[in-house]
Image (cartoon, rainbow, N blue to C red; front, side, top):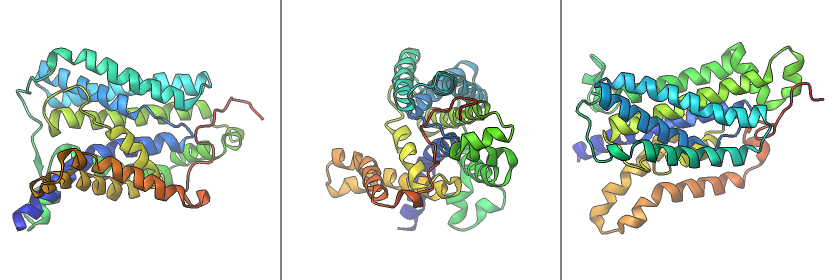
Length: 306
């Protein structure tokens, strides 16, 4: 029984890692006032680029860097459309998702079914990994897990305690007032969207070179949409995103534990998405003022506008 619990919690950490990365990036993006519904597409691009580069060079970390660069470059499309062209952010985000899924499918077509010859090895932290129970669950994991948790804490500190982070939050709350302080609102929004894209691509890289160690079209499986819901669930707070992401990681894992009970696999596969809908429903019943949503989220802003 102990082994089952430890194994379940270990896999929960693994399953929650891409959700935490993508959610943290989306929180930073939305805090600046830009809604990005293209997370799924950026994750897919990150996954295929990381896989192709890793397979070609035999260097997983080079694949990770290439994925981040691709995610940042791909997100500039959304930033240009929403910030410079003042286009509808919902439409732009949906278009980015469709473009990312289609382009990644085309780029990765010849790599479907090919396993990686080199794996991203798990990292065990000396001494801490020897702690009973917790050592195996928390301190002997993929490097992506440690990166995700560290980045989430760093994002919280960045947004709450640094001048640049406060300016980003101010941009999402009141861009007019922020601009009067000599801050370039457009530049900050570009930066935030690019950071969010890098995080989402990193989440995709985890899926292809660490989680499954292969590439198949559609491997993101809706995780980008779940990350957007988790952004609301976490109340736009990277610290809250940590436990929210791993809660959903557990929901992903529990579907495999319930299969021996004779429950329909199709129903079990729906569990993460059913949970997402239920959470969004419960959140919608709350007072919007208590949600901590950026006041100007999704609203375009033209420099000099009064």
